Length: 66
Length: 302
Ligand code: SF4
Ligand SMILES: [Zn+2]
Image (cartoon, rainbow over all chains, first blue to last red; front, side, top):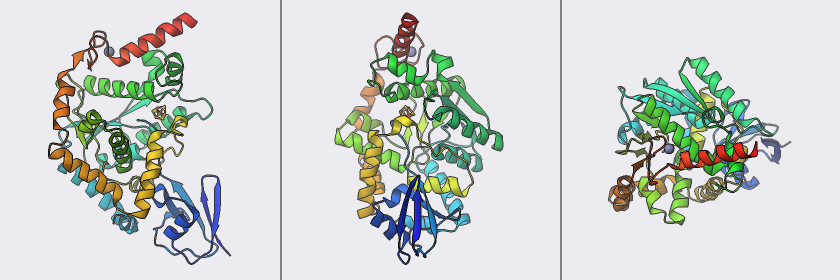
């Protein structure tokens, strides 16, 4: 009965009932560095997570020296 | 607060993003509909999103992809070319591909190994080579402006680094537009300079653009990424920090803060004796010097 979040090959779990942003901060993931998606659709940071959801986080930080 | 923009529904976000791009193009006098625009594309989210928006806005754009030959282990260059070509084919856009190994005689990793530039890290010779080729193609193809997909996070990371070092020469030249120089360095513009990185990524996702998720393997440990992480921490604590840092810099610049730095940079340009591109060096430009060394060391080793 938890929410599963994946980022690249990392997997995290949180309890449902908190917002995406709260979950990210709690897991030590910078909200600005990822885009949360659910079933392939973008969701917003203030969306409340529900148990059994699987959130896929798309990493957005790019770039070395350009 | 910017985060609420991502709360817009799909259609409204795409409309908002497109209109904002147009607003920035106008605000910073980047280019017009009569201009021929060369878009530097890497296969990543920012550059493909930029090409997409500019085309949708009705601008005349061609893409330039530079093949760096960074393939050991990851196949990064091969894969990023595939994404770029697929995109260009899908939308029927003209794509110019310049392969560094064909053009200059070695791949970027080979060149880095043969020079001391960057001491093993290829980024220095890579940056130098990309700038040179972009400028060359822009010039030869009679493009009025070269555009890159740099977003707010990229710009703020560079600004942060330059401020930490008080690199005033670089600060003087940073901004949404870099004017053409008298010697013939192409005019450059960054239409995405006020979008957060996650906004350009959201646009790419929502618009269904297939881009390469992988980063260049040499980006790992890059200073710019380290700065981005620090700045994202600031942003998490105080939302809006990144944008206000950038905008207050632009205002300071506009009020003449770095004004005396700029003319000096431009006045010292000569013509490279080998290729004719403008350079601040007295004889050969850095590109010709570096690649001449690469080719002769290569020949000596063969
Ligand atoms: S990170 Fe890769 S693409 Fe970027 S400058 Fe370095 S070698 Fe070139
Ligand atoms: Zn030269």
